[in-house]
Length: 297
Image (cartoon, rainbow, N blue to C red; front, side, top):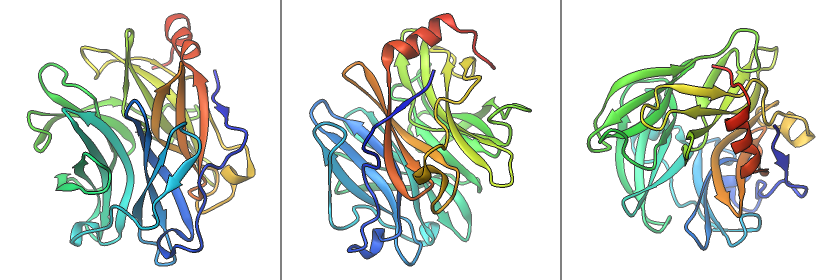
């Protein structure tokens, strides 16, 4: 099972006319509201501080970008930038978890919006340093909100009554010795609910002279997402093209966004931390993998 790249990648590249996104654009969050695709993407200019831009599309392929960033660092917790957003729609709001990078390290922060232009900030919601790759489930599980996050090198879950105070940290998956994800792993897009379980796109990193970032799937139990039911034995996308092998960080495909649209999953990914690209897979192909293939753990 492999993702199929869009033949006219990349979708979005650095814009030398805008100083804040003149060097790198990558790792977008994307949601579809039933009519439009909304993209919040990470960008860097000459100062190498990460900011977030906004782009909108009707078809999920051709995006129109705003000239100025819509989300910028604020305060000491974000002194070095705001990174790698993941967006989940909950109770009428689009909640964005992102990495706040500062002299304190990397920590998980949260904001929310209804229009992708104005944002209500909640600040750091998990104060542990060197934590990132956070994504919210789209509904409560067992009466509580659930969050995926990464305490190096594993994927963890946390639970909350109010989306602000998080507890009950549980490790759910680790790197696998000798496999494509043997160095570290992290959640990609917010999980998508299927009749068989929560479908989670995740990234795995392979030990090498230059570590290689690839993508795979996990399936988590609907009622108890701490249980991993299946896991990709082989990557579903890996760096193969020049734009994925050479760039700000070589040998990287890294995704924060997977959208179900017209019977397919659209996976938006950062290519070598330099461009934004798209790959797709038929939903029926993924469901066939869930139903028929013995998955790794």
